[in-house]
Length: 113
Image (cartoon, rainbow, N blue to C red):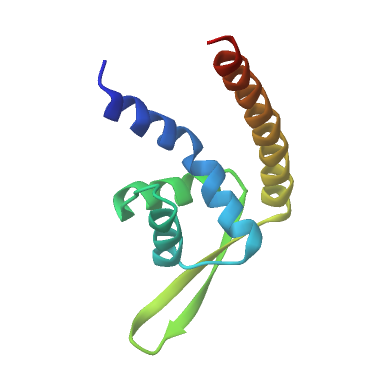
């Protein structure tokens, strides 16, 4: 098995949750989202982010607004909708439960070794 492939699949699995988490804190421009994901070592490129943002918007979880830019074309800023806030909160609860379960299994593994 290729460890890099497995790690990439794990990152992809939580990318949507991470995007919603970022947007639950504030509205954001896509390049700001990419920067925050890269800073957290969740490497992502525009070609990955934009389809996810579109899918989340089409699902009613995100909305956006246009803002004029001093340095170029208008920018699209994304934010959570009310449905998106509820969805994000539910994912956060699920993440907490999953993290607790994984930590318990890892603790049992290291204790029994």
